[in-house]
Image 1 (cartoon, rainbow, N blue to C red):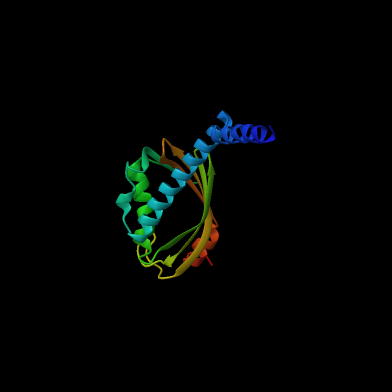
Image 2: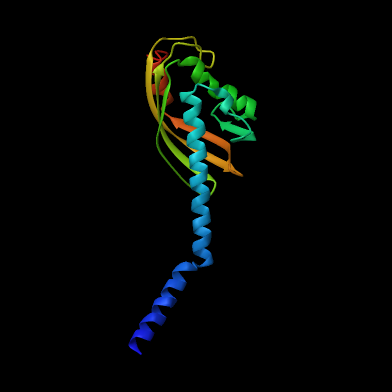
Length: 168
């Protein structure tokens, strides 16, 4: 009788473990969504800098209304988004972009990054200074239907401009 009771309890425990609650299933789905967003995001931006290919900013990974939030005003639309970030490829032939950490919840991601390079080309209308830069920052990212929808970068712009030799 004791063996039957142990067998019965074991079956109940196994059954419960195989049928997670709705809350647990929802959390697993949300986690899977965040993981997929992060994997796609990292792949796109690492490819952008490693392959030096601005055409990776396209409707495969970016919402057609993709927006870069800046202090000077929002850059809206996928073509303007691509042109904005192409400035970093044009301005730094040896650009190295490293994602230090990235995490998220729901359709929001946060990226901690580092950017290094030699300013040897025009960037945002600034002629080459041939100075090296090494800056770190963070980006707030909004995803929409599995695509990049909005980005807003935060970094020490004073340090960046000083390293470029534009401030004394």
